[in-house]
Length: 367
Ligand SMILES: *Cc1c(COP(=O)(O)O)cnc(C)c1O
Image (cartoon, protein in one colour):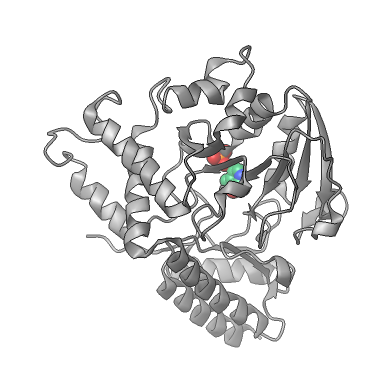
């Protein structure tokens, strides 16, 4: 078999090797079925069981209460930027958004097409071309409207490498979260949320499927006038199968949840994630300023570690040498530059250790 390299891509991103090998083994035919997941009907008993397993996996891992629906939709997290306001903003047609990065801003852009958006806080700094985010706002900075239809926040800012340590406090206003880049990285209390959505391709599966966990009372808000495919209530009534779902994506999510349960669940995953991120942040902090972390320390993400070197030339040199040495995907997002190591759940500790060694060698050779 060909050798795999270290994949630091921000998304689509690394999946557990066990999951890839199991999918490979079953790709010619699912056990006892004589057909592959790519070929079977979504209305078959076989697929019913796969969908149920994927839902149960999510339910068990996150302790999802019974008054929530688990949906697997399409159009990515980006379509949720529209579906959330279309379904949940009426009848008041106003919502609070907390702006902590590029994805929050995109969510705000779509929400404004539906109703009034109150930006309850933004941590954007800088001017013109040089705008950036490097922190999560404090609770005291939030200017929340108690009468808003919901409050939206982005739990992990994939591009800037910042993350909420705990949910914003929003009293009785429904809380909505874009958790695309940190879903399942630690246990959370789902009962604090009215809706959580996450594009699968960062932490739970391949692209083309988005997980939506929605409290059942929220389904009553979906206006009948809404287009069918955009309507959460109809998607829930049809168990995510109003049309043909992403069968392969849901199958991989089933395998990923099984893998995480076997590992010991999200408490265990969280311990591993904290240890991995610590290795890398310590390497940055102990480099005498050769490497500079982008995010403020209190807002640092466990999933996307963003940092800079003294010059763009030196950054390019590191990326080129790292690529040759088998570390892929370290270039920062085009909008911010620098470097970004995405170390999602499936990223191995050994890969982080090897990167730290590489960075220390690179520093010796270049300072
Ligand atoms: C990647 C990402 C998105 C966009 O996901 P798509 O599935 O490509 O639409 C949205 N929000 C966050 C936080 C992301 O990391």
